[in-house]
Image 1 (cartoon, protein in one colour):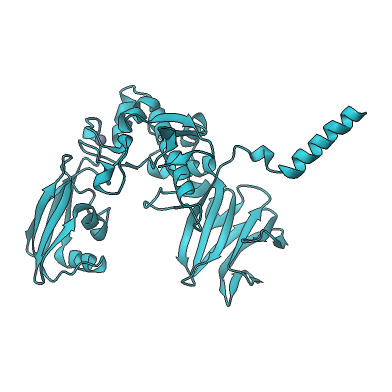
Image 2: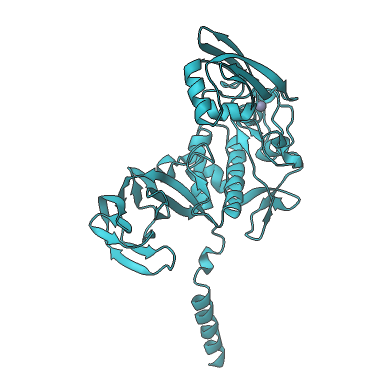
Length: 384
Ligand SMILES: [Zn+2]
């Protein structure tokens, strides 16, 4: 009898004090899916609870929501007819996936937050494995070789968990655009990409037993870039290396015509003082042929601009890489360049062709992140 009592007591206490025991291996990420908006359209197709963000207190219980307007109200948040006098609420559905935001379907829960600029922020909370399932469709393509999909799954997981550690004190860990990883929720999941996530479950890239930011880009066009040339990062796996694999990438070579007026406006907006541009000269390139410094001569004099800053100012999808030449004719700048992206870490199209040639995901990752190791993620990992 005593034995049963003891077992019952152990069971009781373990359930009482570790209610999340079944989720012990779940690692949550917080993705900002709507930012700076005036309103959003929300449906919840299961019963749900509205919780206060800071205290977790239950504020409301609902059955379901059908195309309901979420907006800001005086001192709070409106969800349809309901008004909550609080800066942020969590919508916790009973079933997942049952949240629809602006007609996209999402797994997990969402936080609706009033930003300090009085705009709406919506953050999707979900398990990192579910999150990557919504990333792969956008970052690569479901028809890619399985080993390249697996490499991307490990890299995307590592990137997300690293961001989650670094941003622990912020309202969210990641955005859903190219500035972290493009994420489209449950709507973007496909069979093959989800299989790649499953095959690599919980696997991350580490260097000396720590997580690092596993940057990647579309096409390097010959050499990947050393992270230290762009950011204050000095790590062996991100030192850059030769890549002969992406020569047949559709993004290997690019051309773009940009009017000088558009460029002047973009540079002005980014804080550079330029008048009418007269000439542009490449001052310096690094070993990977990427431009480190440009000199722009305008009616307001000469300015020096870093290659990466120039690319981000004019637009990262207009100036696809910093490996380019430029010619000015009749108020137009004609760019011709190689590769797409900042060039740091894994070259995605290189990985595509490596997988086609028979390399597996581990070999691909070892190639692009020298001396890194694939390990099972654990919450106590430190980060670089
Ligand atoms: Zn490459």
